[in-house]
Image 1: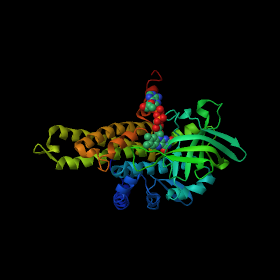
Image 2: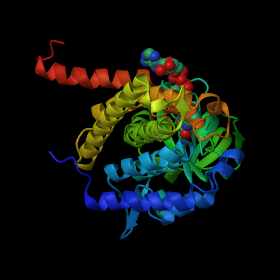
Image 3: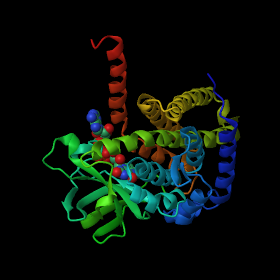
Image 4: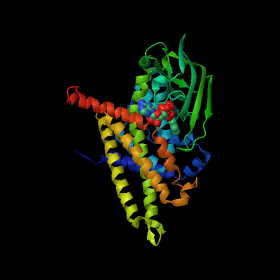
Length: 388
Ligand SMILES: Cc1cc2nc3c(=O)[nH]c(=O)nc-3n(C[C@H](O)[C@H](O)[C@H](O)COP(=O)(O)OP(=O)(O)OC[C@H]3O[C@@H](n4cnc5c(N)ncnc54)[C@H](O)[C@@H]3O)c2cc1C
């Protein structure tokens, strides 16, 4: 067993930190105030090769999952909000294109999207259904040369700034629940698309948008994967993106934890540094141990992906545990700053809300428990000859 990070990935992590120190850290306060990330930042990410894909000899290639985990932890330590915008483009949109895009749409969008010139997002959640993906109501009606989409996607990260969206819709309303949906790549510049930016508190400065589709025409080659397989396809995308969102969650916890440590070593109360109170010292020990445990489960999931193994159990366990620690440590860290933590501009202020938001992407805590339970029972079912 080898626990060290390969030298190349470690070097990439250090180079990425330099990139963040130059292009993110000095600008973040302004983006936070304005509630928006300039597209130029995402184009810089693409130019620097920091998305999870590259084009080589006209082939669209996915980079190692461990590299992505390192990148997302570093990014979210500084800004979980910027990290989620990168994730929506890269791990929902681009992963969808990589897994299910037709050759025609890959030729059209992949190279530009990998460089951050064309931005992508994914719209699945509606006001009527989020966790229950099969319960969505948006319709896709087949017409000559393509499809016509009608309905509203309720909460789409990057929805205002994206050029193209991966969209799920009911193509076969009379079919069984698991074969009713199909997936489409939709040009958001199309006639009939209306976007409304939502006012939210968490994951600032990323944008969250409601997108209404009224008789939006989608050409036939923009059907992604297979007709009737939209449910399975979107769940597959979420299975992949569960790993980077776990790294984002871990980064959220670590960002708040490290900020609080600096403060605890510095701030004196009743004549002592905060870190010198034994209950705070024990909190620090407890959080450090649990953060490290989450990182190990996450890296195990990356190890499985990079070797082509099944990673469903590890990625759900990692996300479930990461959300618990992130929620606890961010609330604790904010509390350590006392009244200052309530000020919008204070750097610790964002972390508790960002940790709250992480449970919603790629499946809530209840959904993770359902997946873990299913995977565990498969294994115990095998061991007990199906008696459980
Ligand atoms: C900031 C933000 C960004 C987002 N970005 C996107 C995006 O880019 N694209 C997109 O499509 N969606 C996005 N979403 C939506 C997100 O994916 C959904 O909020 C999430 O899937 C949960 O769905 P829901 O909100 O409808 O809650 P519901 O599914 O209605 O869940 C409500 C409650 O029921 C629980 N629950 C659900 N199923 C079960 C069960 N089987 N057993 C027990 N309890 C259960 C849940 O855990 C939760 O506590 C975003 C949400 C937020 C907050």
